[in-house]
Length: 141
Image (cartoon, rainbow, N blue to C red; front, side):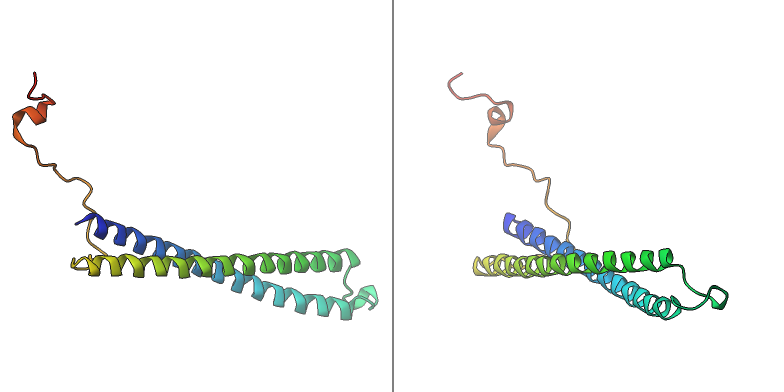
């Protein structure tokens, strides 16, 4: 593998990591939205039952307040996640452009595109010119 192929593999790996991060953020946001909807329904139910007498299954004002606080906290978290999702989408788009650029550079040089699953060429032997070069000896010595 050439250096350009290694760069392309690295760019593809970065793209996959960013896509995975984005998917995780979106999954978390979906779960939080479901929790917020469930809490909103519970809050509406507790609002209805808040004024009822104690023996009819009334809700404690402390319990109601805790529900409202938790709902507000989840809504704030969703807003923060939406901002992170927007940043992650921009990072995915930038990584996709980098992959395209690396692939185009590789193609323009006439080299075939690297197989994404191929192992990296980390350990390559260098060409050695004569025994003196291996031992670090120069011709002057």
